[in-house]
Length: 453
Image (cartoon, rainbow, N blue to C red):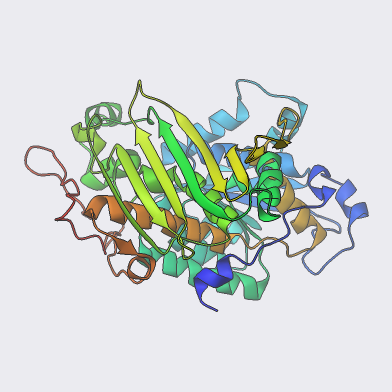
């Protein structure tokens, strides 16, 4: 089968109760497998690659997932990010008993803190489980290295920013399967009780055949780091590579645009419900409000109509503009009813089939780590999320291609694209793939003009 078919063989999402079991109780709950962490020293050594806010949070979640975990190594392009991450982990604003226990298992000596572009090799060598939370551009490189080294992996979404990166990730996914390496991707809705129950009932035919999906990530936007502020902090001019790495959200080679970096979550839910990926897309977008020099080259809004093989549509909106209607959600319409928001399902006549109360549901960000480390402690191979992550990422890239070009782009065209967004050389004095003009402006994608495949 081709990659798209293999990506959507449904896994059993009704996971066992092992996720709630941590520490020494795991050994009594499960038979020891070939990779079980038992014996005189059952410590699971965790390594963090990418020390921003998401990486810091993921590291603490990994430590909270099982009491035999220890954070032993960290890497980031910038040394100050490593130190800031450690400081934030060691001194949280709020900490319960479990968090304090997790903090006690942070043991990253100075010689296990690696900065620059190559430090990830050292973290992988020092660790049993690798957390990959750098900007998405580096995911294919780091994932490939972790798989080649035979490590268990948690990696954040998206998993690439271009089609060559997606193909590289999928090739590594095949190796991970052969080695039976657990891989969890941070599409946390797939670990969220509300979504699991919702999608399960839709799959069981609660609203009939899906006619249309509506997916949204409309918000006021995210942080921006100005060149002037960054250079003032550094006390010197930054090279272009340093600046773009510090302000990575606004450059496609690093981020993929917000339709890829954030809206991937909602697009993935539609793919999950459909058990499929789009076969083509057309759309539009642009920069209307977020237009400053430090906003790089990405759009501030996209609207994309995706089409699935059965003719149904996914209507996709994502926007980063303040003081507008905000919505981050998904909805589905079927021949027998509708699922207008997560956890809710109604028949065509208005009868309530599901109205899930998520008040007492576990935190899905924690749940994905709990389940990963429970499997590792049990010596079980349970998680192969990579293909779902790659297909979701490629679907979002397809949407970006459609809105940037103003053309109908097919899945096959997008997947076979040789347009490589990565730099030729990773070094602080090397040129990144896009450079500003003499006035500091970056070239903005122009529908009808820009080459996207």
